[in-house]
Length: 82
Image (cartoon, rainbow, N blue to C red; front, top):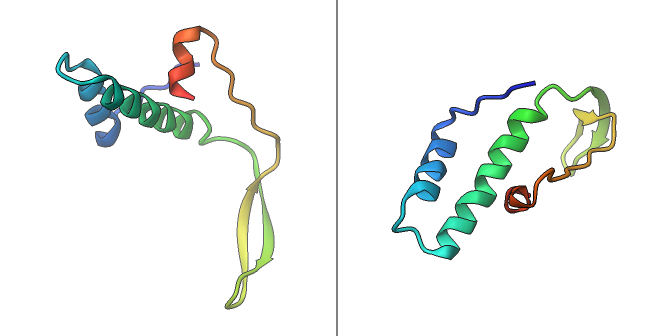
């Protein structure tokens, strides 16, 4: 399955990662944010179910994910994204 992430914030972080002037800390922060962007897109079709919860103000209906989620980096280079 292929996911293409073209969100403006992700593209901004990709520019930071590609910029040779980015220092190590800036590069790592941008890579972490890219991982979050990719994770959001990759998990957008997870099965959910409706449940009622009590908030401080009133009862609300919310969606919860019905399966456990595990993120695994396939290559060592992918560890930066987690």
